[in-house]
Image (tube, rainbow, N blue to C red):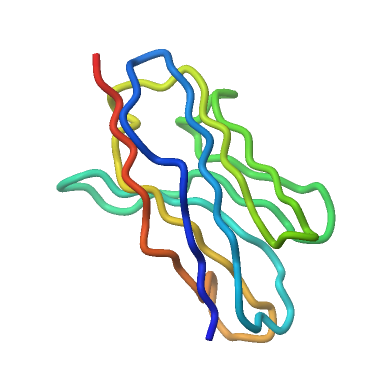
Length: 120
């Protein structure tokens, strides 16, 4: 059974930083990419960032604007999201996701989410 365990969320003042981590366990046959999404109250889930597991290709949501950086530790099967210059509008539950190339569809596995709250 695949599990994605997020950590690192919390309360931070505007302008501050947080680093989210997501560790993958279990059998992912052909890990293709991992990513981060977020969902604020009353809003739809939106894409934050993704990274190819093999290679250095990364993509970010338009709102990121050089504030966030996604990275990975392949040996630990962990993906990180460094978030700087946080704004109150970044407040949301952040979810980690993994895409197994051998499973049809997009991102196949999801974490439980970690709350990020940015105060004024």
